[in-house]
Image 1 (cartoon, rainbow, N blue to C red):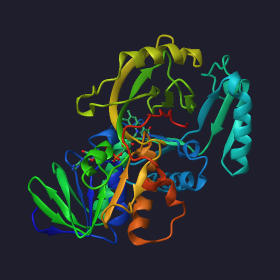
Image 2 (cartoon, helix red, strand yellow):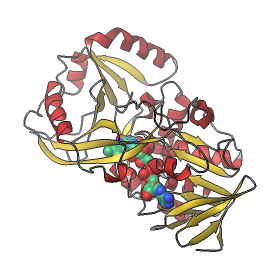
Image 3 (cartoon, protein in one colour):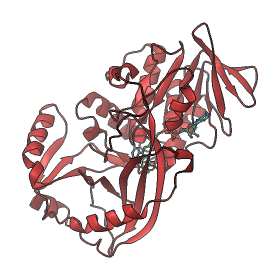
Length: 384
Ligand SMILES: Cc1cc2nc3c(=O)[nH]c(=O)nc-3n(C[C@H](O)[C@H](O)[C@H](O)COP(=O)(O)OP(=O)(O)OC[C@H]3O[C@@H](n4cnc5c(N)ncnc54)[C@H](O)[C@@H]3O)c2cc1C
C-alpha cells in the first residue's frame, strides 16, 4: 500500500463509509479502508427501521432528504425500501401532550395524525389497545434490509470508481503543519488531503490524539418472534415510549422487536447475543397490545455496539479544531442506517462547499459544550 495516493480516504466500511464513498466517487479518487469486512459490524446488525420523520420532527428538511433518497433508491440492485407507517402508542397520561404535538407537527407539513384506539384496532386487528388511548401515526417511514442496503451502496460506489480494501486496519492519521497528509496502516502509508473517519463507535478512540469526540459505545439488541398465527401483511411498525421497545413486521410474517440499549464500557468483550432479560421484557409486553403473542416463538436474537452522543444525534463535521482535511461521521446512536443518505450529502457538502437542502449545524461538533465521552447516556426507541 505504501506510496498510494487518492483524493479522499474513508476509514470504515460500514453503511456510513459506503454511503459517503458512493456520493463522492464520481468526482474524486476515493478509497475505503475497512479493518474487517464491509458492513461486518453494527451496520449488518441493525433492525433496518427508517424512522427519520419522528426522529427529526424538529428539522423536517433532514427527514425529507433521507426519505426521498430511500424512495429513489428502492429497486437499485437487490435493494428494496418497504414503506410502512409507524405508530407511537399513547397512554392516557400522555394524551394531551401527544395531541398537541401532532397538531404542531402537522402544521409544519409532517405527515402525522392522532388515531383513536378503536380506529387503530379497526385498521390493524392485531392490536388490542385497551391500555392506550390511541397512537400517533407517522406515514413517511419504512424499513430496509441493512446489509443489502450497505452492499448496494458499496457496489454502486465501486461502479463509480471507488476502491474498497478489507482486512486493512488504519492505525493513525498523518498530519504536518495542521494539514492531513494521509493515513498509516500496519502494512504501510497512503496519501490523501482528505480523510473521513467513519469508524463507528471506534472513531472516538481512533481520533484521541487528534481530536476529542463525545462518543461512547453502547449496546442494543433485537429479537425475532413467530406469532401464534401469521402476522399477515398489514401490520405497521411502532414503538412503545418508556418501554425501550420498537417493532416492525418481517417479510415472512414474523415480528422483529428491538431496543433495550445500555452504555457499554467493554465493547470488544460484550455479548453478541440478546439478553434473557430483554426476551422476558418483550414476552411480557407484546401480549399487552398485540393478539397472538402469548405463546409466540423466539426464533432469533442478537446484540451489537453503536456509538452514542450526548444529544443522540451524530457528529458529521470537518471540525475547526482538527487538522485541515479531517472529517468525521460518527455517533449515529441507533439511527445510522436511516441517516446514511444524510451523512453522505453532509460530507459531500463539507468537501465541495456545494449547497445543501438541510442545516449542517445540527451535526456540528461545536454544538457540545463538553467533549467528554463520559456523558449521561440517553436511550432512544426508534422514534423518540
Ligand atoms: C441491534 C441494532 C439495531 C439497530 N437498528 C437500527 C435501525 O433500525 N435503524 C437504523 O438506522 N440504525 C439502527 N442501528 C444503528 C446502526 O446499525 C448504526 O448506527 C450504523 O450501522 C452505524 O454505521 P457506521 O458505518 O457508522 O458504523 P459500523 O457499521 O460500526 O462501521 C464502522 C466500520 O469501521 C471499521 N473500522 C473501525 N475502526 C477502523 C480502523 N481503525 N481501520 C479500518 N476500519 C475501521 C469497523 O470494522 C466497521 O466495519 C442499530 C444498531 C444495532 C446494533
